[in-house]
Image 1: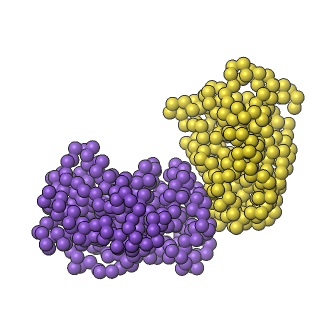
Image 2 (image 1 turned 180 degrees about the vertical axis):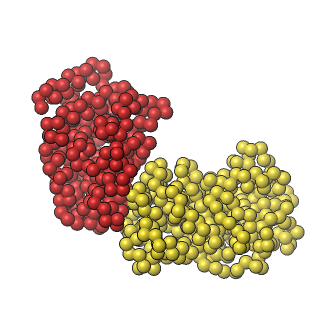
Image 3 (image 1 turned 90 degrees about the vertical axis):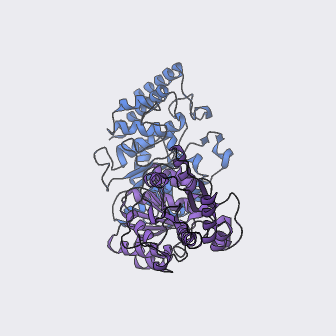
Length: 274
Length: 321
């Protein structure tokens, strides 16, 4: 898919994220908008995974550690044909499979996540299995910067380097905000690149909304043979909707009817300008 | 069933040793068997396993959360994973990983809680697991098993390797009497009646089955009381059918476990029986709500009546009371 096509897709995904959050009257709006370009490039360019090969042992794995931004994952999986998009009309409704965090009841979801600090260990296990079985698949996991203080991340980071998991890539959605405030105020994890480097990872920085950079960076994995790869994606929470960008209240804010209309107007303009 | 104290071999191996030997045998022909350890291969008697199958052991260091998460990731990729760590750490520190990464995500990890209960004795309460049955019973999609003897341990490990459901298995490290006879069968969720008697029922689990059986001999010898003794190795799913059968004629029921009296085997039995209108006399023997007295596993057992004398006395009181 060309970068232009991917750019259009990102806009469309943003529309859909808002549509289903408004419909459900719930969701993690800001974080879904910060990570959607990453998911777009992963699923439409990088990952060898689709609805047809999802049960194949050779598929690439994507495990979303920051499970709360599930709306981004759902709209991407729907667009890839894992399930009809109309299913998302039931998001968070009574008896729906489409709950507010990833669940394997939804086709295409690798692991049930939502409690933070779990995705990296799960990914390390899947990556070790790939090495043991001499398979070529890669394992990707998306971490939030707010979840990094969970100690389990650092346990897993040690293991990933210890086992030289160059088939593992962690992507940090570094949008610098969490529910209480700026991550630097809540529990500063910077300089996070130096920390992962010290743990034995090869780290790259990328603009998490730049499709070209994301493509090229993921294409270059493993950055160094014998080392796990960390992509620090610098993102903007609420990206794409001006009044949401970098605003704490949109962590899980739901737009009003008017706000939703304004957002769609902005997104339409972005679409035209691609 | 001809299972008297005389024809039981006095000592056998620790269940821990049977676990490691069985796993080693299975791994020889099944390359998908993977052991994950948290600096626990020595205490898990898995050093020979690691030497024989270096590619089938994954060491994560002292990091139980990562132990369970990595195990779940391995299982998700088709491996038959045994995550081995002291029960106290495995089921407390990594509880969220057990709940989410193993049970909720349905990754069929076999969680092996070694040196369970008060096996670590005088090392103290940090090293005791008297909460694990209670906590893990509340987690959906997890089988909870405490094998009594070498036979049950071997069977449980073989079955666990082949089942595609998450399982927690816990045992201690002291040599155990063999309680089985040749015709004994083993199945998760089916209690084993080791001895049958008309007067009282003793339902025990794990390493407390052995003293329960001794107590039954003492009851017969000294008081003429005939006790049924059941090894309820599977705490969840509990064998409700067997519970109904033994409760039917109103015999007193005694439960015994190396666990808090709260939330374990005893309360699981009690809630089933009460909800189903059985009103048998009932007593739970276990560790009371306190940090245990200092001592070896045996001394702690004796102190709290998880012993031949303690169980026999409690049974006698129930029968006479």
